[in-house]
Amino acid sequence: MTENEKLFNELKKLSKRANQRILRLERLTGIKEPFAIKQLVDYLSSEQLKAISKKGRIRASKKMNETQMIATIKATKEFLASGQSKVKEVKKITKEYSIKAEKPINYKQANTLYQSGKNYTWIYDYMTPSEFWSFVKLAKEQGWNKEVFINEIQAYITKEVDEELKRDLEALYIYVMG
Image (tube, rainbow, N blue to C red; front, side, top):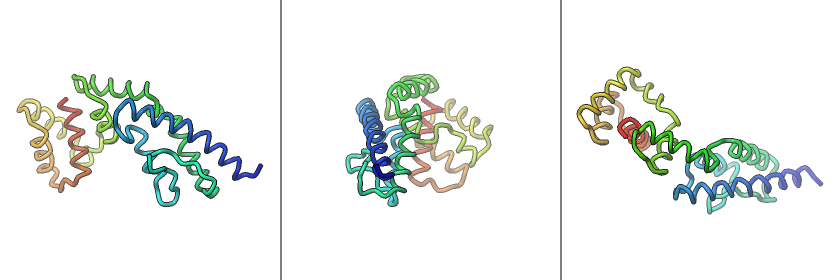
């Protein structure tokens, strides 16, 4: 058996396991590419790898070169080893976010929180922790809605809010305001 055949067989076995997990998580959440799947798909769909099918599944092909197979195997192993590739862990993460928000949140909201960095220390690039939490306190006292929250932070940080930053701020709003 050649090295490429060994790699292909390993990739085929791993991709089957990973694709089963992807399908389970998508069925559970009702979201395409939720939680850790998004990072995996973003990486594997790169021009160099082309290891994602049109249906969003990991592709194992004999036409892949050795480098593509090795990179796909490595990424797939990392995905399978991560807790966020399992239904049990996704339920746990969602429950933790619900506790922090002090109200039940759905999988879509939990996914948004997860995708926005798994933590919110990124906001400290724009303001100190004490400044941020002062904003949160004021927002809660005055009952700011999402738009007011985003506008106030934008005015403070004097940075144009692009779509990505707006999504991050929306996730942050959900996290701190519930």
